[in-house]
Image 1 (spheres, rainbow, N blue to C red):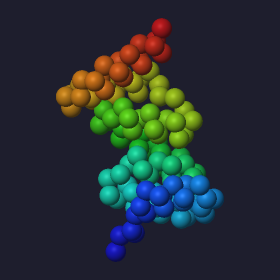
Image 2: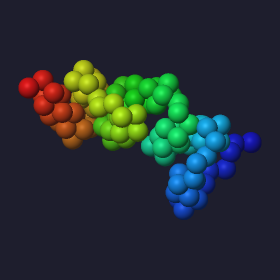
Image 3: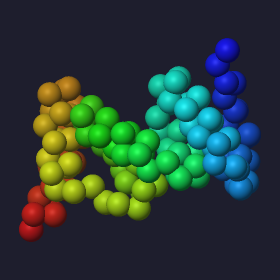
Length: 113
């Protein structure tokens, strides 16, 4: 049986507490199982799970998901690289998300200049 996800208020309260790493990771994994990657990020950071954050980062670039990449970068404290922005732009364009592609290209150009 899947772990029941907290409602938004309970989620906020969980994030404000000092959860044990195992509980934070279990909550993050439950969100990921439901396809709710953005909701999982704070719990992954709380669980000190850099490898899982790195996986999400790679998925964001591969999917052309600018919002997810920014959220993961913020949680991990590591800004996206020029290459990540360029790859995300190409993936977003291929997926037909021209707004994300244009924004990612701007970010890549800023880092190049």
